[in-house]
Image (cartoon, one colour):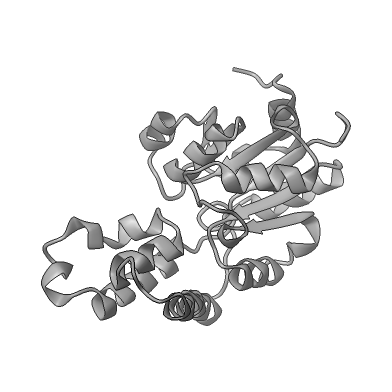
Length: 232
């Protein structure tokens, strides 16, 4: 890949799409249903906020036990995805302010765009289609495509591989400390947006630039960030 064709990778939930509340509710429902009753109020590990920060299969193993049968696990994974999608379908899929415009502008500039998400593929593809953004993404990579989910770097390493770029010619936009750590572990620079995590959490995770919302960024700003020539 040439220097004229850089890559930029977006996270999905909480970054592009305002879906955090839907998945928080979904995990709260699954915790009430699947976690032993005596543990639901006594174990901090059953806080939906913690579930939002982990991979779906890791969450379900925490609820069903590490020895859960593969078939049962995948049934529950599909069910969790369907529950979240149903909430978004009922309430509408809403992008965070400025995200669709930024994505389209970067695409117009010739930047190769990748999506790296913990969402299940049907949810990721459906969400992008609902926002009329699918056509702008060259690559969509989900947790199931790699051995280890965020905060491991695998998903970002694989997305760069599929885009045909290296970490010197690519950057990331994330909303979570876990995602920032994953991107940094892959050698990438990160723009973090303060939608679901605090500025302090994102700073501690190693974000290189932090904005309150995507409307603070133009395509020129991102291009400068990719080149390492942005203003301090």
